[in-house]
Length: 502
Image 1 (cartoon, rainbow, N blue to C red):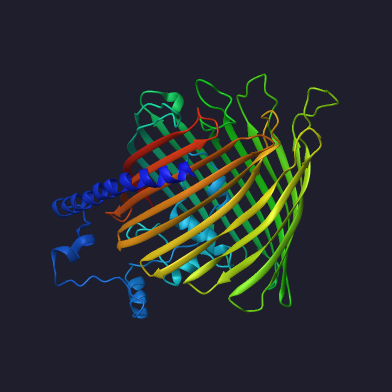
Image 2: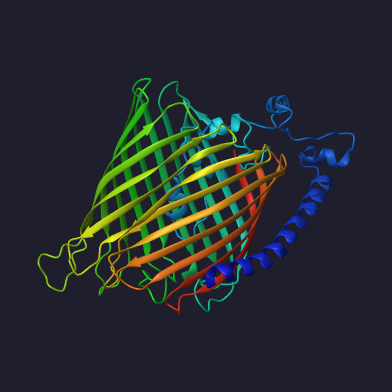
């Protein structure tokens, strides 16, 4: 609780100051737009000419949204691939960029059977600026949407560790999305890579790469099949209890997953079965440590009741098997961490149209290890996300996810990570967007007295000054705490840059 109180006190003071500074940059953007003839003055024409009545659509005037769409102000983008809520909250390290607000909206809306494109068509703000909303390139029946970000920044704790030193950095982020335009079936892919490179100490550099895809087969009006895959690369956090590198670069972590699912509607009941595999591999480990590389196989079955009401209950259960790459072969000093377990979960899917959509579930998961010297890895499971749109210019997302991970720490059978955040996006004008994010994670290790928790806060602004480009700025604060006193730290980071997308 000391971390939560300290985090809220610190972020309140720093965030107010930073938000005032960032908002002060907006008039400078406006002056530049009016003084330089680059063909984007019309973005702020309503400020120059008071007779121009710029108004965003209101709840009382539904027709205004359609008019704005026809004029190009509120465009409806093609739904793109978005990582799942669990992947967005717990899939990459603290050095990686958070998922875009539009990806959080899309992933949350898909939980209720909707898509990001449907949300945009219904007037729900997805956090994107309008003038540079990507159209992409046509490649047959596929659409490619590339983007590139570059910027500079400063961090007061580049190591993200206790006693870390300040350092400046440059960052690059490149991504390309692929979406299908088919009458039946659907394909979505995304490749993304980013690097935050520090000037003084390259060992603190934070490379992150992700790839994901989804292929849906429409086998009939009531039957679908899906293939999902994901890959991620990052480096372990220096303050993590799992980190084995005392100096130099921390160990790389790779995650790979794949899933096949089959869904069938039978009267008012929808059945969905799935088979999945998830692999975690660690590089650069020290010779004295037992390897942590492992695979998790699972089989699940979900039953939901679609009675046409706004609340749709569901029940989900499954079995899982975790296998480590290293086998003990009867060696007394070796700990056999292979485990078998189960998962049960129940919850509700909510669909109140564009105003409120999402899903929430609670359950229990347990893994029983082969080695009797280790406790079972078990605990409560909380998963879900909601999208709430109080007005056409404001959107709020609330998300939570639970993740189980293996470990090679002596006496520990694994760890459970609970992650959640609240995000709010505001459309000040069609081409000026701001967002606020508050997040909290809690990791507990089973079998030993070790807990890690972290609070984060973020403020961001994006201003689209032309059809293909926007200026970005963001401030992020982190407060990390651990029952190991040598690991706690706080960090502030501010960055600004240019985004180009097509």
